[in-house]
Length: 247
Length: 247
Image (cartoon, rainbow over all chains, first blue to last red; front, side, top):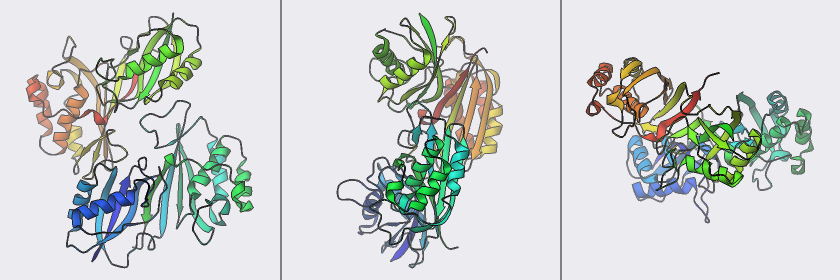
């Protein structure tokens, strides 16, 4: 068996999420079906993060084990040829050691959440950003985000369906960047709770709209209570950017 | 009658082009149908440029005349509400004098053509960029573009269906900009011939791939012959950015 690490881009709009589901298409299944078509082997693809329905990937990392001898470049080309018409692309493929694991070896995960502030509906980027009637108070959002960075109990920002054992996470980065009517929130951590990025962005949007003060985010965090959450942002604007590994 | 100037964004993928057609949907019809729903009036919408099927608009300008008294902001909101689910959005609406014409008053038109250089297929931006394998020689493309800037007979870069009286145009800008695997070609002129931007980009791509020398673009221009055209780029990557008017 040879283990291959993949870098995967996908448009989350037609999928029920990353993880294989009985009731609809998933990114995992699209790749596994392509791998079966290429190798005749029933492979399982493991990812750095299991994104929700409608969430996108620009540089998701994943791995799979294949018995058939095949060069990484040939595997990538063959997977891309077979994965169509699913909007999933293998951007890179390399051979890794058998103890390399896309999920468990991952040191850091990086997300971007894209907001477009305008009254008019979105056209070409419908489903690729969250539209909010603008403008938003970006300095206030930046002040609020500072309350979330660091090691905290993120129970407030955690889905009821979250399966993590502990609600404690260390948020390394939460940065709000504006370019005209586009606002991006960048989030980095070793790992995130289920819905954590969307929940943080939801609360930051309330601050941007003046409905919450920056300190209300601090208080929501301190409450350690999902009921204190102001808003969970929709999946549309969320992109898994990249994952870091040793070396 | 009051004349309103519109700024329009649209995703060109589902449309036969800007201009109203008998055999399929058009951006013009989407706006005219919305205007009828709002006012009960049969209006004609005139645009700065009549884009082809699959070409997109980020800041297209257009105008229409309406008899019913209505404020510009209310008209914009009502058009956006009625235009759904078409991927067309009115970004701005203002009252203008009756001699203001989106097409004939226009002083300059600006396009961007987006290329993504990679082997893997596109996912979320399928239909929104032209994918080309492998790196392109951007300095060579920049050298080639310099041969096209200025006042020339652009017969080589003109569709057989072009209805313009003269093939002479003054190209004010043709700039090739690279950011990692993304290359944009920006083109500005008072007006363009039919397919001119796509034809210029098609030849620049041949230069980028090393199939043409930069001087081959100069020779193709000098030939004043459509048969000398190397390649017409697909509509996917073309965006009408904006149009300039007096004051």
